Length: 124
Image (tube, rainbow, N blue to C red):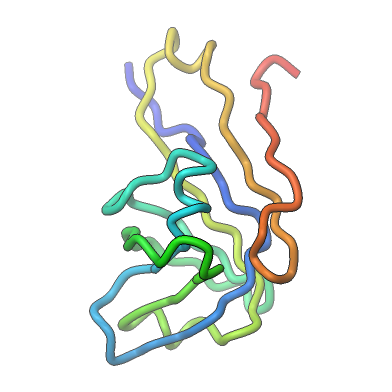
């Protein structure tokens, strides 16, 4: 049986732009994607720490080193620049995959640089 489990997470990134007239998705700095194993077109759940709003969308690759966390299209109406967000990516895993997988989490600084990268241990 496959179950959706946390693959990776960006914790408390700061929204840099909300662009309602842009093609929908979330644009994320390429360096952040690489740091936690997210890919272009991966489906993510984005939670707004200010309002509690949550939405699902897909990932666009942002300019490396830009710190970009941009909500695009309809999603832009639920987020504002300066909001803190949690970006979660889930993957379908069987029990064997789950037992060895450790989700990679980037804990962010205010300027969208990584303060710390940790691994969640399912056995902890």
